[in-house]
Length: 185
Image 1 (spheres, rainbow, N blue to C red):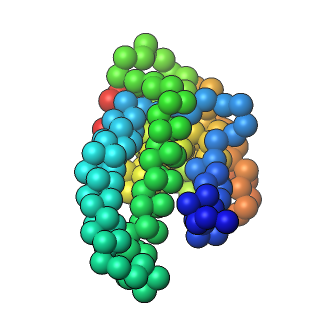
Image 2: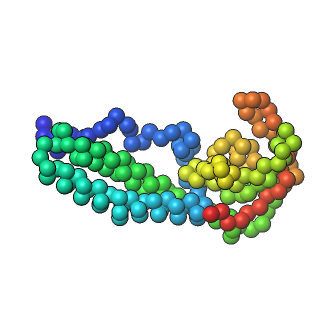
Image 3: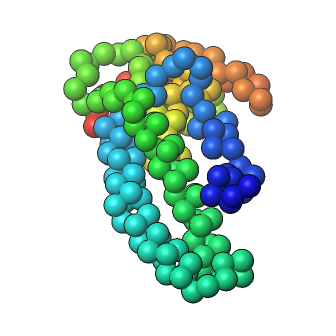
């Protein structure tokens, strides 16, 4: 069979995602405007800059002759597959995204997607988290996914409520001190 009609595969399935990036079945891909913009910028960077530059290198390497031992060609093809896989992923996620802007939301004491919530943990420490999309998780900025156990426990609760977080270390009572909706970058 001609090699042009065979799929080059490095053993990874395009649809296999880490568990923390998988959306629950039949749910929307909620995102904040900042997260949507970051994904769109990454897609633009890949499509308009990285991929064209890489295809030039691959073409140059292919013109050098024997491709079986040509490191530039082999690495370039592998990197091109990675870029194409990421482009497909980003395109799908952006097409299915539902952007929710917390800055335009009516003030409420109830916790919904894109809320910034200050809680009093069971150990007496205060913690502030922002509930964001699965593609926007950033623990250094205290941005947690809306499908995380903490966020699911907080969703629909109100300021002043106490909720019970069930975790592997046991149950923890959490008091909601403040709920705010402000722009998340």
